[in-house]
Image (cartoon, rainbow, N blue to C red; front, side, top):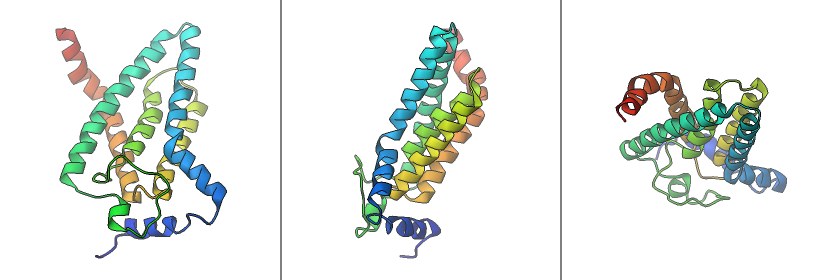
Length: 188
């Protein structure tokens, strides 16, 4: 099997596992838990907005996030069916995996990358959102994504694919809302 750049980079990153226990712990936290911390930060900020008299912020954020996530996940599973890429553990049984996944059939694109970048990206559409919060969530989404490669459950191409899917959906989000969602809601 000829190895791609993504395979080679994965194997180089995977070889670092076990050399620094603190780094391993941080990466496991990033791969397993950080996306939930991101959700908690957004909910906390949403509650702050709610009690500050801006309840619309939280409602609008949840609406946009649900729309983005549903469309992104549909695209993700369509890609997974068309482009069959198993997880690294299947292609490289000798690789180390620090966390275990539910399934092994779907690797491309990364659902964690889609979810974390959707959480961060939807904030661009909701005002008022401080720039520091958007930056913090984008850095967290990057950490989630890098961690998924480090712990052995994704290739770098899976992360790039998840990031691209999330941002393409975010780019078309205003059009989707105006031309699809609002006409459907108008009928109800």
